[in-house]
Length: 283
Ligand code: HPA
Picture 1 (cartoon, rainbow, N blue to C red):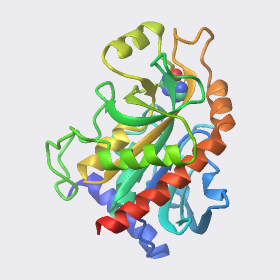
Picture 2 (cartoon, rainbow, N blue to C red; picture 1 turned 30 degrees about the vertical axis):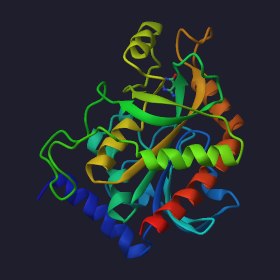
Picture 3 (cartoon, rainbow, N blue to C red; picture 1 turned 45 degrees about the vertical axis):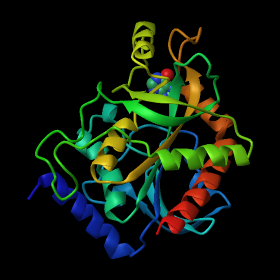
Picture 4 (spheres, rainbow, N blue to C red; picture 1 turned 180 degrees about the horizontal axis):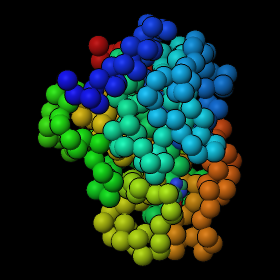
């Protein structure tokens, strides 16, 4: 049996010993959203620290907590990842996407990805939200390299609609309903951990990227491979190198993410409710 699959199954079994909770929606919380699970709309049923799960990757970045939260968001059954691991932390790319695959294996049909990103599109402003409509992952090792896990998906999965169009429409509508200005665009993932050079940003702009970050695209590939329906929003925490006149720092990223976190949370809650309604009518 495939070693990577065996590891996901082991983690899954561990969780199944603790709970039979089947989530409708899986959420990955990016910078600034870390305490979303503690907000009033979320009723927590169970938390499982990543460090309790044998073999599970644990984040080493400050400001990134590490646990699964099982609960309901205004009644919608969700599993929330409070903190993720990044490729730059030194984990194998298959470990980086293990949590997302695990949430799919627990039954989540929808994966809602969030992150902090640098704005490349000059129509964006620091603090904006960007609906992710597509992505460029070619700079990062594919999580699907190696023996294909046939139990999850096919060897050569189609990526022509990674981010589900219906879910994107629901997020657009949700933002309108609560008066949040939502930009949209293409997300490019780098390995990090260094921020980009201005020349890199000019190159990324030329190939069609609107925002840059160090997570998400690999997670979306793994989730798409196993047939999950994906949506995502970036918080533009800074303008990218060369567009911003000042040096980029993790402090700036965190400060902006924190400043707009309340709106990000409102948008997330509204979108989750509307996505759940949509899933229920589709059944
Ligand atoms: N580059 C890469 N990742 C990021 C950035 C950035 O400018 N801002 C937040 N995450």
